[in-house]
Length: 199
Image 1: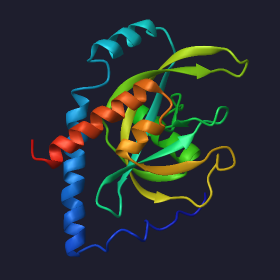
Image 2: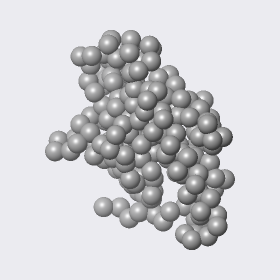
Image 3: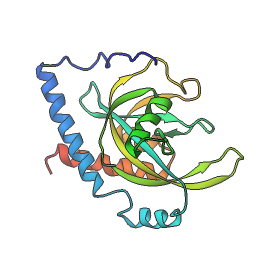
Image 4: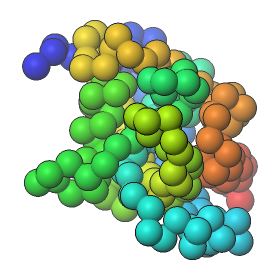
């Protein structure tokens, strides 16, 4: 198995005043994640309509990889799709012998080269159009989990097939090429702003 790299050196050392500030920011971000669970994943009209349209479609499991950046704001890691090089998040089918959250974490390792801690409850779900090997397309429903990134690999299974890049939440919304996923991240960004303002 590839060796993991150390946590980004820009992050403050444990035990410092800056670390206390980062911890408070992380608590607010986690509050935003929890608040977003009640606002996404099929509870609004658009998601309900699209979910009904893909009731019989394949289901995938993915992660939203995040960290608190050096500037003290949440950052989201996006990867490119293999065929069209669009900015997306790691996702895939259910891995044999694994739970949905374990399957999602496995995809994060294989596609993005990250390891971390996943929440057992999903943030929500979204629908997208999956490109098949024969060039045809089919709708697919993705159950999305939060993944706090604790380490990044220098080498990983799909390194030669994808790029990865950290984005601030607002920039991630603009970069993501899957409309429902972008909408879900925007809900999360707004919840983060609300939490940061103490609402």
